[in-house]
Image 1 (cartoon, rainbow, N blue to C red):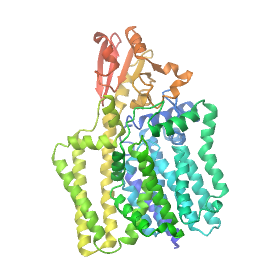
Image 2 (tube, one colour; image 1 turned 180 degrees about the vertical axis):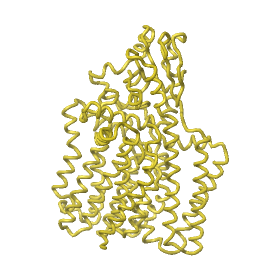
Image 3 (cartoon, helix red, strand yellow; image 1 turned 90 degrees about the vertical axis):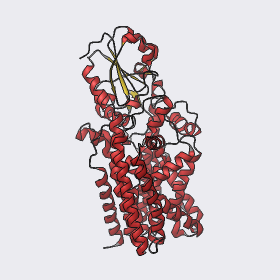
Image 4 (cartoon, one colour; image 1 turned 30 degrees about the vertical axis):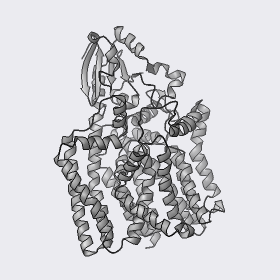
Length: 585
């Protein structure tokens, strides 16, 4: 079998590995809210209306993300019906494609075993894996970028023949898709990283050698075509996308901000590094080796220099940005996995140093988690979620409830993690004692892969603990045809409310949200009420149900006469109120 054929087999094996992690229990938990619910609901509205080019949330025009994720979910809904697992399937496929592309590139640049190690490394990056089972565009975005990098970098490795051109064209097309998934940054930045690497080794020109005209055409049409169409159809869209959602957002001066609370630079660097633990350590050593050897002068090293520039450049870009969230570093994770695989392949084949280094990482962490598991864990839970979870930060800033899983549910997962890390440390100690360097990378990969089911279980607990599903079922049961259902605050805080209840709520105090731009269009006027409008409806004798994630002291109900308010249910950090006089069933 040729090396090329073996690389495809190992890429398929890496894809199977992450599917075995992600598919079991895919639809077990309800939609996490906020987070998943709004994206599932946007897709459901597109599927139900047939208007797939006019995205809406709660009936209001939605411009925050491009449409590809919603088209894929809407297609799943049409084929399989509306369900949690159908909505999460595109994210799973995105993660699978990203892992396969990473393994394929590693196999071609190094060897097949290095490719499978790179795929295992990416699959065992906890932050990446969690988003692989989450209804957001992140893993599709990572996949499109990594497929693009793989195509362009493999095109560089060829001799300029037809195969090289095909790889380059496929790479350009994939980067165009990245802009259709989430952000034009996915189109521009990878090309810039490769161009910088080629410029350093004086191979930038002629451009057509690595950016064929056909590929550039596909990149621009796929990447910018939808943006041009949306700009013509929706006045203000281009200003919102380019200026408000990017330039003003990076400067922290948005006109239409939502409630997300950004990470500080140190927090962002720490969270993104821990999300790629422990592979970030080997990747950093590999980058240091490239710098020490001035590898940028060697054209053969251009793919590795491009990967290093891509990963480091992404961190630098978001470090200087005023707005950054935990998942912003995810597109760098495949490059980290590949650089780590290179280090393990070239520098860790013998000796005990790699085993000792990772032993010193695993053993103290196992001990620390063991001590935490033996305690009450409150401070640990608060620290982890306040750093890594967007909604927890939003709650702290907005005086909302904090429906985190109880420590009693998380404690077994922490204890299991400590035991697995301890077992990995023992195996690493044996590798160090026997100088079995060639087994050390496999031990690290096996240990980290064994931890991943616990990370996915924690995700299920979080989603179940703050889902709006239970509240929505109660709304469906209580609401008569003429009942007005109202949601307080941005609808993304309970994005799946309409999906689960079948009732579209009116929104109160909700313009600071992802619908801020959409709210400026005349057809959105009926979707939003002021506090005064809610009070008038409440006291008019109309039947009103209010769902709110804000505690009673900070909710609009505090301004209503107490004798006209009836609390019906408290569930998962939300309150359900009814106007007194409304018949209850």
